[in-house]
Length: 225
Image 1 (cartoon, rainbow, N blue to C red):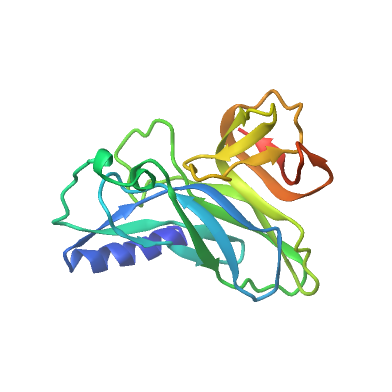
Image 2 (image 1 turned 60 degrees about the vertical axis):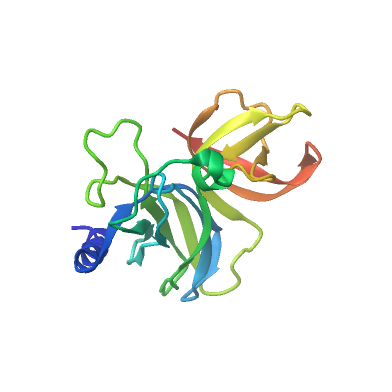
């Protein structure tokens, strides 16, 4: 059993003894420092899918081992909470956008410079059964490099579901899934990339040597599927 499943099992057992139930969620998008100092916690931006039309208490579900940091987010929801969808009476960002939050990954131990995978529970296009904590797929969103000294702070790695669109100035941009706030998209460094429209991507955010579409901070797309 994966460490994340052990952690979720303990949460579920605790919830069963109260009036709460555990609603597992998924990470649609993740951003983190490309390099971090050894043994020092670091922050990770997460876009997390919301549990339907009801409110809950968000928990990041963070675990780490000798190979990876894993996020298995979930919400604690009262059993008596009605599932009631009234989006016309609520702020638009409650129901139509993912939860945009920051989690703290634990410091990673290493005796030499090395990489750890950044993983998270991910959504699937066509689940064959109701999603639970046990059957949520875990995907690798990228890697983080742990250095003993002088980590490079110029880049932020990123991965997750995203789409490409062309803005009113003719610039190709990448928009993380579930993000609707102004300024949520990134200018693609490779403006000639016509093969990508939507999918699971990996890459990094950095300052380009030459501004692209008037922007110095751009997204370098490394892979997509």
